[in-house]
Image 1 (tube, one colour):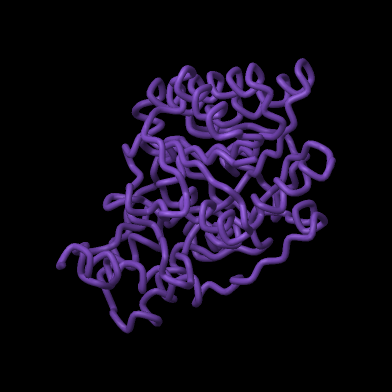
Image 2: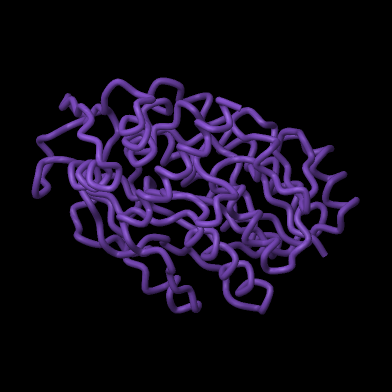
Length: 328
């Protein structure tokens, strides 16, 4: 049996493919390459270029490759963009996920591991966020993901489709072996953007909001290293395959860092005192998002890269790799 990874040519998806291959799994990637890269898919995986909303194509892939489980990463993920283009986000993240779920049910797929987000929690006033707290997303990105969570739960109740929903916090870093990393040129991830500023690829770094109710006034986030996150997906998949219950799982480290703290680490690791410009808040940004992670740890997941300096170093190394690609 094989595993289908949608969005497997993108940042998190490509690391998931590496994790599955390292575990001896047969992997098929479905990606339309709108933000992913063909070169990010290892030769050991099969790449099908197409859209996750194309039900005929997805059906064909499932039947031809004997797919038993789907790991669904294909989505748009930029919060400010979701505010200005909500209908585009509901199409890509919700409508197409609905099509994928329907195809999974019709073709007898047993397990779906879904890439969700801490954005479903909205702007909570709590030091740690448990999976059971009330959900109140404040932007279309979070709402589009929450609707997909609901569809998976309803499909399980009606059709027996088994699911694990992983709500992850801020993903960062790159594969320690240098095989993949965050490669989207205009990505908005703070650590990537700061690394680009340190390496002279951006003229400065913008900080959005300095008046939040946090220790230094900037947003606090729980930064999880991307390989640790991919391993959490593998643990969730193995639990489903072993007869474990359907689950909703936070993915983070249980502690956070502010924007300015991250900036200082990037400056220290890079040795570059790049320009930082302080500006007003962006729409849709919560003040603090830090995960309670007891549930994912109870499945046997243990992080290997819970160190902000290590994560920053990985990001800087990957940016240098990308610069070398462009220069070649």
